Length: 262
Image (cartoon, rainbow, N blue to C red):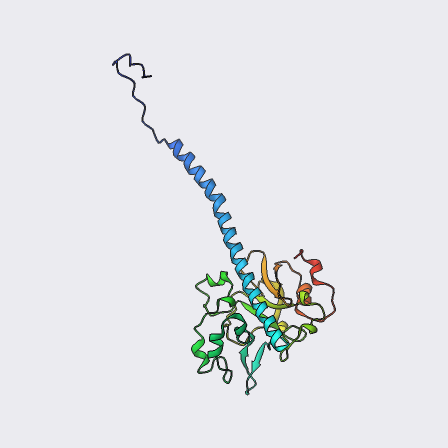
């Protein structure tokens, strides 16, 4: 049915063109801002959760490699192997490479010279992604060959220096003892035979000063336990709980009693 003609012109009235008013624009901007305010934090949270999942998987692979090493040699590797000069020449990270499907680098490595010897220096530019937290890997200021995962060495730990441990030595239980911790910007090349010393460690997660378990994950950091499982320790983990987790046969109560359920 056609529109009635205009009383003045006798022609049908024209439709008014769409007018993009200031009010319409403000409404659109407001809706967009609200959507952005919801989506951006959600995307960031998902991305951080994915990074933490990759970090957890890295530690699980390292744990599997350490256990495969244990199956073959009936013990975990030395934290550091010393050369004839009494200095640390080789790291546990190099020792488990064949169990991380990185045998090519292992085959090119020479154990008759230190990790920074003439031949082994040629391998220093090689990256080992399983030894890097993805959060650190995304930071261009951190060298690509820096490791994010360190052992904590010292008397009574899973890594006595010198010495090796077996699963049977974990009198407190393998699920109650830390093998590997996450450390932010460690400054340690993944091939370097250097880790954290328990006596120099600040017993805290993300301590404000000094050495400790550190990460860029929100709320805590990841650790690998001697049973091969990975646990996320919250930032408010008590010092006594950490000390209990670092020692393997101190006879202390279950350290997880004061922590959220795993």
